[in-house]
Length: 255
View (cartoon, rainbow, N blue to C red):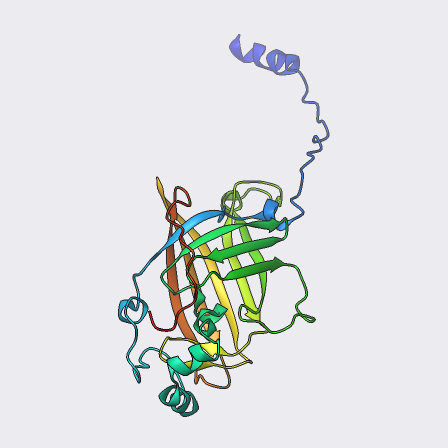
């Protein structure tokens, strides 16, 4: 009897009705602020975890260890004199972009506009502008040069087979910055030089371990004039609650 009723039961099941998938409307971020892989805005303080002897103590004349300089750079540094450069008004030459982020300091980072990230330092009172999508062809050489930035984004959901949706979140990734159009300057406060043809690249990432956050910046400096290979270093900054410790001070070659 059970076998006899099975076909009847099957015939009484409602047929499946296929419907067209609903369209999903997503707002794709259009500017760098909206596309940001992480929030870098706020106040940050240097954590000196590398090269303490060169960053926290005025380096001795002739101590060039750690920087891949050529003989021309060594001759320049051997002849360099801090007092002469200070008298010539060049005390900020060590605060150029290739060295700025490894000076012990505090940063104040904010958006100047939707496609320009502004980085101010209290040490030397410098300002870097990171331009998203701008052409540097017409930029004049300067101490901080011209920096072009780009977010390298990925969506963690895509790792589990989700569709590639540029508007989906949360987003993760790095900030990639390339800088050129630089004036000549110094890589260390004992006269180690870099030339006008110097180019640098940086990779910014945010690390979080609640409640703390760290901004890590990996920098590679290339100079065909004074370096025999890339000068590579890492800088780490910890987020601060506010700007109460931010203390702007002028450039110095002697402290």
